[in-house]
Amino acid sequence: MQWPVRGFSERLIFVYLSALSSAGLALPGCVSRGELTLQAEPEPVAAPPGCGETICDYLFTSCADPCTECRNICMQQDDVESVVQCNAVCQQICAPANPPTPLAQCEEERAVCRSTQRNGVCVDTLREDMPKGRPPCSPAMGAANCACGTDAECLGALDRLNTTCRECNSAWLLPCLNAACAKERDDAVGCMGARACRVLNECDGCESAVSALSTCFENAQADPADVGGCYSGPRKCSGEPLCPYALY
Image (cartoon, rainbow, N blue to C red):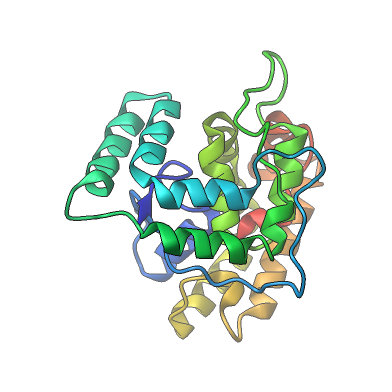
């Protein structure tokens, strides 16, 4: 199953690096849903107290009724081009030739998900826009970003939940990376390409490149020199630096 996320790309930085490693910079219009591959805990992970919907519940809804969820995502887009692209993706998802995942499989995946840290991420308030004059990314969204860690599907779900926050971050992430961490970026891209990897943080032998890129990104956000907008960008969007895991 395919989804339009973060300007129709899963984790903008990740897709950018992946595209570079494949010698193409164009961002794809959608991403693969893929199979669920999670490290389950010995015991179920409880949802946060008072939480009505966790990441696991959201992913279940997306799995069980992808057509409706895709249309809901399109309604959140705020420019004509994004709406057109999103609707084109939905036409593919909703086509009779692409039936949804069997409900039993969605239920099985939700059961597995609830035994992982994903079930500790609450999304109850993440769809809500912040009041006018406040940074568009809420403290709850920032906490959820870090709680998702390097889990790309979890992070992608957050991107789909709040278009305004996603678009704010997308405006500064790439300029920051290009201006402040070009060498680290190139090293990571080269490592991915040499090993034919798609996922940076799961690429064996690239651990040092991943660490260097993450450290550079974190340091750039703390530098008042504001190279590439690395300092002002995250503070405009959330009032604080973006969790380093957002690189993945």
